[in-house]
View 1 (cartoon, helix red, strand yellow):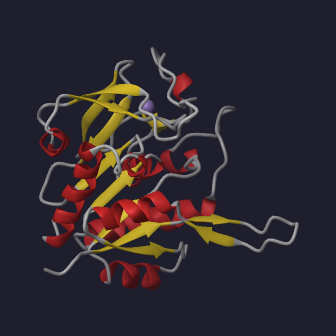
View 2 (cartoon, rainbow, N blue to C red):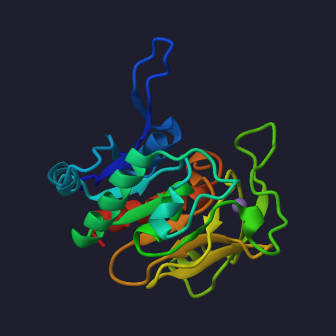
Length: 244
Ligand code: MN
């Protein structure tokens, strides 16, 4: 059986002014998790504004992982930047917006993680909390401060009528948490697939014949020790094999 080819979005860093040139990087955890789940990883450098290049990248792939990273420019979802907004990478935003929309058009499965989940929501017309403290009732600490990066941190309540519930096979899940933003208004055509106990959205999915799942936590850090987190990648790999 052919293994599916999975594109992994990268972050771009500008030259640092002290001798290091501009670079394009991805966290190794994404790569090892795709391999562990039976996929073949390929890094996707951002090529903002180059529609032909983006389309060609996608045509060669069976599925796309949208990775974590900096904040999404709020102008892209109709808001002015607020005081608690973090670093924004305009080139990466421009690239990933077109990547997501073209991927959907070409019927390529999408797995969004952290910023990637937020990008899915924005690309399909939703909005974000620029900082979760702007969300009424958000009390849980969503940027974990554990000494161990692999530690679990807070509870996620899984929506029973979701693909996520089928993938995980459980109604609650302990997750890690490395975010200060979250989905605010859900994009049309999406459902909430999981929430934290303070009601913050922890996962979204787009019901239909194409696999589109966004997860606010970082399963790629946890696939070695937690089979349920590997299930997420395996379900995505399976969908990528069948192109749906
Ligand atoms: Mn969280």
